[in-house]
Image 1 (cartoon, rainbow, N blue to C red):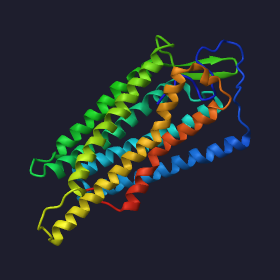
Image 2: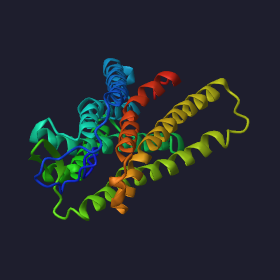
Image 3: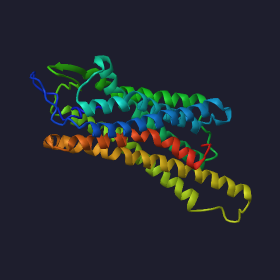
Image 4: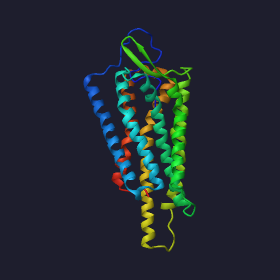
Length: 309
């Protein structure tokens, strides 16, 4: 997502004088952060490409749930490939090197990708709910599933469009800035981030929390009396395994993005925080944690070894 100020703690109201980067970092610190961000990039791109390939290359993997997993992997791959390193370079150096067109994309795409990711998780939760709580009701067809995915991306683009529309670059002596020039620079950035936090974090997590609670009570809280067949218990274990894995995926996502949202809420409520000496290191830390959310899912799938059916 696009902050209204860059990671070097320079606001968009900078004057035309030569701007010194008061939070310039020593080379060793830049090197350490570079290793951290490049690791996220490499693991996320490689891992999510493997997930995409496995689902597309094997017909038996093309289930309703796995279509949403595919969409989740694609959005995570895209975020890692197009934004992780660029975000770090701009946050660490406070100078935009990538032009006006990529500035718009840089501000627009993260919200789009995160929206697609978390609503793919929500769709998986609802699909699991229908399969486990209402097993006799018809499941989504492949065509309807693709339609749901299309709607997810359409809504994601609509939510992120203001960031693309208002994005611009400004070149001053010595530095170039990429930022979102909101009509009301004092209020609009904070209001928009609150809206994004609710729609792309709080609301879907609440839906998934309720859904998985109901599923958990059904799977772990009761068993059919007298039914001790091996087939029944095997199916129950398989369902529990998938649900447990998806709960881990959701909790990991929530923990990774929570500090990021809290950072922007805190700096939005108290503008003095952006002048704090260590704010850049805090921003780089919460940004890294948020970006790292793109690399964990393939690791979780691998460790739990589930087909997600």
